[in-house]
Image 1 (cartoon, helix red, strand yellow):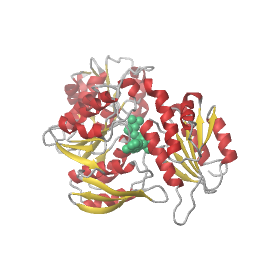
Image 2 (cartoon, helix red, strand yellow):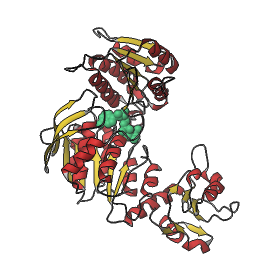
Image 3 (cartoon, rainbow, N blue to C red):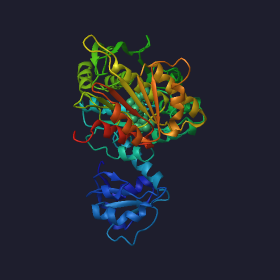
Image 4 (cartoon, rainbow, N blue to C red):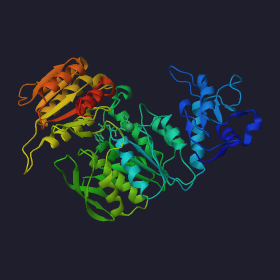
Length: 473
Ligand SMILES: Nc1ncnc2c1ncn2[C@@H]1O[C@H](COP(=O)(O)OP(=O)(O)OP(=O)(O)O)[C@@H](O)[C@H]1O
Ligand SMILES: [Mg+2]
């Protein structure tokens, strides 16, 4: 964090410092919510979670080196740890994050939201902006009311760029995050059906994502996906300048002639106001084209030169795990582990990538493709139809073998078994273990196998097992 005295922290959080003599003690290391991550100079935030009360770990935070804690009560049982007592720890934490941003008027804050691809895009943007100056991007998928202030509080005196992933499970969530870390550039990637069960409708999801660009200032920039009608329509909700990105003819940052190489990596011609250049991505899957266009638009706004941006993109491989993570086995089987999470759009994107990897080329025959798919959570009333739709998409993509894992995903198998669905073999298995056995028996050298499901279905583990069977570690 930027160095702050405890008296300043008390000021900005509206808290009361105990003991007052600790006023000049300085917080200069990261702010943490996990006492095990406390280091000398840290501030520990004692959150009260669903199952645990952070106040139970004050001593551990002190022992790790924390110089103070943000709490809702005094802690006489933990001598030697000053506390800043507030009424509401979350509100205090949010206010602290906001104070950090306000203390750095030169910092360029970029907010990213959308139903799919936020983490992939922030990873890519983090690498690209990192070429121009010190950049803070969230760890993993830190995009909530806790992950965002944790990220913001990592800003240091020399940080130039702050990238904030903004997730939403309801109306008002993005607005809240944007108040905490007011962005000058806002990116909306897409409006899909992730968490539609909680939102109620896709229209509500669009409203929630639009809160990001409603929060932009007049001299800000809204980077909007021109190929998603619900995102394009957000142009009217912002005072900021709009930069459309996509394949649509009127996109200002535009991809043309998109194709993939034999490794599933996209190539395209990039057109921008700064010129046109060929681009190759180091990531697998056409869906990264839209993510990359958003990154280009932000990087140009941030003042980077086009050749620098394109060179950085060509080098930027996967950062966060289980997103199109590709492993080549020694026997020539290609394993794609995309089991970080799943919604209907990212399922379709992954199936397209699988089909691309399996497609024949001038010097290679087509490869046998396996889609090992599990359930998609949080789809509410649409769940059955959406699962069936994914099965139909597997058929349409020309996948050879569909392995559906678990009863809750059975709708995918049904969708792939509709009359006229020729060519695909459908296997319905009870659990990941059964899928492992099936694959062990039937995978042949040269096959390509994709694993994808919502996070708790055990497919990440299965993907790792199949990627590195015994003896190949
Ligand atoms: N533009 C895109 N369209 C569809 N799918 C995408 C896109 N970008 C990434 N994906 C896929 O969506 C899944 C989630 O990607 P990622 O983690 O980047 O999204 P996210 O928006 O951060 O998700 P979360 O809401 O869980 O934080 C991955 O399987 C990824 O391959
Ligand atoms: Mg994410």
